[in-house]
Amino acid sequence: MSLPGCDPRTLLYFLQPFEPTIPAPGPSLKGKKVVVLTHVNPGAGVDYQALDRELTREFIIALRKKTKKIDVVEPDRVNAWVEAHPTWTDPSEAAKAFEADYAILFDVSHFQTEDPRSPDLMEGTSNIHIQVWEMAYPKNTKGKELKDQEKEGSKVYEEQADTTFPVRGPVSRDTGVSPSSFRIKFLKLVGTELTWHFVDHAPGDDIQDVKFNPNQ
Image 1 (cartoon, rainbow, N blue to C red):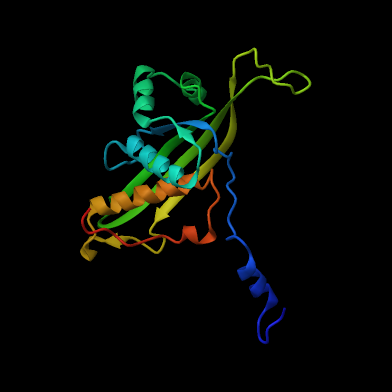
Image 2: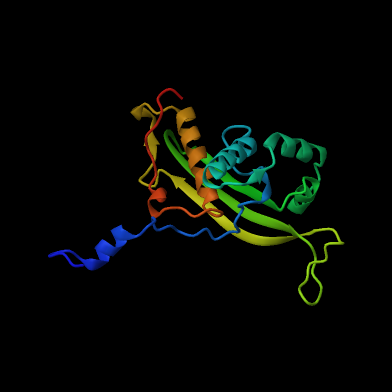
């Protein structure tokens, strides 16, 4: 079928049964049990406390909205494990403790919502190193799983996630946006962008929402 003045490629696009998506580069978490760990480096420049717990929470909230049949270990249980194991270095230790399939580690090297050089401006910047460890049975020379042995952890994904908000430039305090409202918005954005490493997302999702809730 052809219509006068209509590009057939455009017509085919609108006739597609689904929206085009950008595939996630990391492993699929559907149907898996997952442990999420967030570590904030001392020199990250964080201007408020409890970032590790808040970022973990926002990531899990966004992940659960986009992924069905996923079992995420409750953050309070993970926090209790971390406090009981202050010298842990291997994320797969947490995965083994909770009998999880994957352990996700967010290593935060930088996270700020204010530039000390411009106290009247608010701009969110973050640098987060992502690592994913999978628990799996060892295999023999023929590739068959040895289910009579314990599962072993191995790193299966590693990537850097950097976010700047807003991309169009800093927000002035004179606009009436409170620092707390700005921090909440930025946390949600970072948490959502981290899920893009594990779930497909639409191309338009990367258009930043710069509307703020005046009640926050």
